[in-house]
Amino acid sequence: MNISPHDAEEALATIQRVSKKTRQSIASSGADTSLIVTGLIWLIGFVCTQFLSGAILIYIWVGISLLGLGVATTLGMRRGKRMRSPTAGATAKRISMVWLLLWVFCVSAIAISWPIDGHQITILVVLFVITGWLAMSLLLYLAPVWPGLILIVLILLGYFLLPEWFYLWMGLLGGGGLIALGWYIRSRW
Image (cartoon, rainbow, N blue to C red; front, side, top):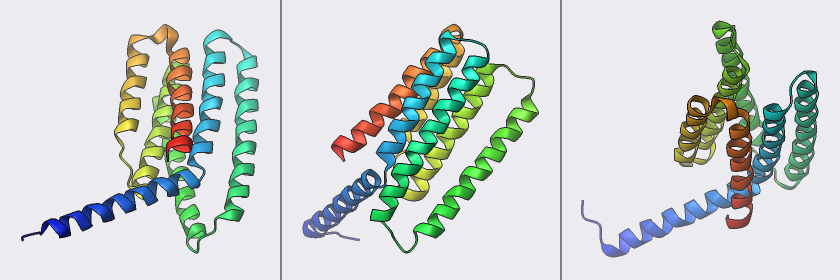
């Protein structure tokens, strides 16, 4: 098959338009806000976990998680009123089912592995969350997964090489990385 230079240029231009539209769709979907909110929760929660102990950590995690859920839900509802598509409901149901199944699998893996320590529970939950995000990237946006794979490698390096600083590592790497990615999407896309 021979492709003329003109046809090749047209195909490349089409690919670039689709790529730009995909980035704009991701940026306008609220992904940036979700990443920033989740990043703040992880940053605060993991840094507190590194330096505090006892029942106060449960209250901190529950409190910041509920606050984050409230913020994300409010912002999502506001954005949802502005952006409606005919397939949004069906897509939301499929996304919910993927996350529900992933959650069941995560809880099952923890139950099978029990007894495990806090570091192991943390890394299992985080790996399942990242797997979910990677799945959503592939299913919804056909986005590259290499940033998520790099994040997994860095998390595992921190888990194995810095066990005494693991929670601080998670807060700075995980939480800080999500915040940075959210700001990048907001400002560059």
